[in-house]
Length: 370
Image (cartoon, rainbow, N blue to C red; front, top):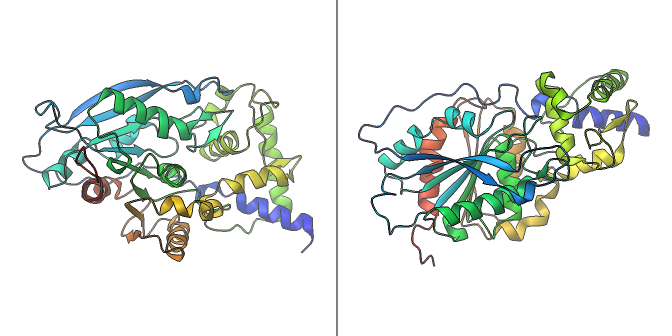
């Protein structure tokens, strides 16, 4: 196959069928677990966390971020008690507030405690950007959302609440783009988190989970049309009315191929005049966990527990299985479950009956963790 044709087909695999990478049904339809009789209420606090890591980003994203914090039923009654903490990352196109509605918290947190899970603090930080999502990545364009989660939010919560400020008492979980974030941040920060739960992760592979048969000339036409659309944008705000697929592309470009010398959007696209740009495509590929997981195996070995789940009707299950296989190949203890459901149908049930119990079992709940 000629080199230009190979590159064009590679572009087709990496860029165009984005709906297979970030599902278009993005966290909307969820089966809600039944309310547990006698469940005690948690306290919900909404705060603003200033993030030094997000200051001076080129996109104009606010460094003051919304964070929702759920304090367990005993928090204000037992004022000498300190608690483990779970950080839960939302998916693409939504923020912390919508995420809270779709996983039906506080109901599912209260239900988990009522069913026997140890009490803990649960934190939902907001990482939605002007294009719909930060990809939980580090970029001069969007700001450093990796450090926002791992450093700024954790430091704020430890400073303002009675946490157990120990990695063995901190858990990280996320769904879809948040699942990608939990992999990405988790692989790099075992110094901060002690247990890891990955829910239906997107964007694991340098290409979508399913390939495309689009002809190369059609790819060129589509790429040129998209470039024309992007060139017409005078600022990131102008992208608000673009369709899901287009905004997802912009979010990825802002996160993975930033360019401070390319105003007004400050990123590079994977094509120029319809021609694939190998350097930009390489940057995108380098941000795929299946491409960099081998570099962080020693970090993975530090986790007390790693779990992953995905629905049997979710196209993301194939790459999730590949990540599980990668963990297994290095002898990393991990659990992997393919449950009955779509990308979004069981997320509330998973939070109540699987995620919170998992952290209850594996996070240290004592201040003198051994």
